[in-house]
Amino acid sequence: MTGVINMLKPTGMTSHDVVAFLRRVTGEKRIGHAGTLDPAAAGVLVVCLGRATRLVELFMDHPKTYVAGVAFGAETDTGDAEGQVCQTAEKIPSLKEISIAMKGFIGEIQQTPSPYAAIKIKGVPAYVHARRNEAVDMPSRTVTIHEWSLLGQEESFHTQSQETLSGQEDDAHAQSQKAFQEKENCAPARLHVNTRVVCSKGTYVRTLAQDLARGLGSRAHLYALVRTRSGPFDIEQAVTCEQVLALAERNELAQVLAPPEIVLAEYPVFQVPPEWQQRVKNGNACMIKMPHEGFVRMMLGDALFALGVSDGKSVAVRAMLAE
Image (cartoon, rainbow, N blue to C red):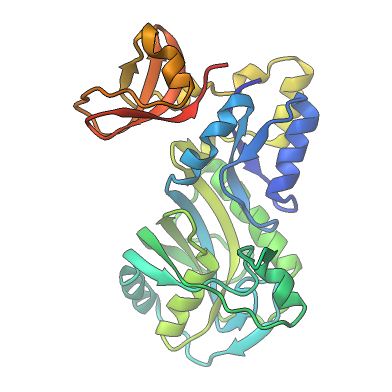
């Protein structure tokens, strides 16, 4: 079984749980996801099956879009509502101040993730060191914020934001709110706002929220997080575990399993000459001029052979997709 499924990860499940679920349902062992979501977060989880697992790195490089709920007034050690309060602030910025400050994060920025991140330090996830109360020297990283906008204010966990969210986006947001609220360890924050952020891979949205608040002389943490888009995969087309299970029982999983040919349709075609087929399978580049630089679909007739990368002078194999 080969293809890509746009999964709607619910709160309470880890990204690995979703992969394990799909292994049980499909019987396919080669499964991988293209970007971890925390258990209390919800939303789009791109999952690759079979030969499509060779495309995981490509999908991980895609920009991600999130709806992030930011609670001002208290900062936690984990950066979200699951952590313990470590600092509070009397100053609560205005919506205008928040909106203006967000613009200062657009572009390339340096981030230092929380010690409770999953980044491995000496082969061990940072959060393991943090939970042992061991000092963790977190490396900073360069990430890109393409967009960060204010959607509106929430007076409490039970009111809606000023901008209406779409169907599954709204449902997932409510799930994430509830999941974080159930684990809320901090004093009630005095301002809750919803924001939309479009960012590169490797971005920690909880760190964005903390840095935003600190720059405004306040403190904050996340109280909800929903990934609404990952590259071309949108939350409105995402399928739930329940839907996948029902389709599998009817032997109709093909309805939600996008083949690599469809997923890569945006890239131009490079026809592999039949005499070069074995050379390409062996990983050799095709020395040929191309008007396009970047990813290409390497085709053998009508069949997708591989994902390639062109530098204008040659085409190299990025991921072999043929058997």
